[in-house]
Length: 211
Image (cartoon, rainbow, N blue to C red):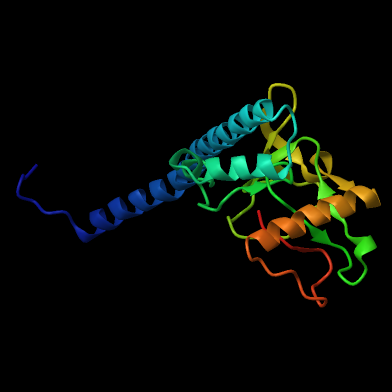
């Protein structure tokens, strides 16, 4: 074989075709592997949040969701440790938090105070809107579909981080006295921080305070 012989155009095209096919075949494998690695990191972040939540729960004698508890949790979230675990490494979007660690006031009808509806949860602490089952094709907002499962940190036993259905982990609080108490807490919390109260034309189901 002549060492000085150059590749022919046909050989170059065959080589490029083979390389292209390998890329096409291996890219999905790379994407799946990357997704699994980042999912593991996401689980670790949610575990860190759950561990801090349980530490504060012990300090406050199990009284979660109070203003003092929420302020303590928010103070931790503002630290370098909290900020490092506050978002999904896949989408770089912040996690959503339940009313146990953040104020949530959901308005069913702003014009009738008796119809304020508070979405409550006895086990949900935080969840990732990107890691879902079935897997979301992109990490942008996708309307909720019944039966979807979210990667969530749950206050069950010693704590769990797993995929769970939304209807499995949330409850709706309908006791009017408790709703009014929660609503007044939310209003005081907003007023202390200069957050304006929603106008009467606020849409049904809107969130007054974001997680």
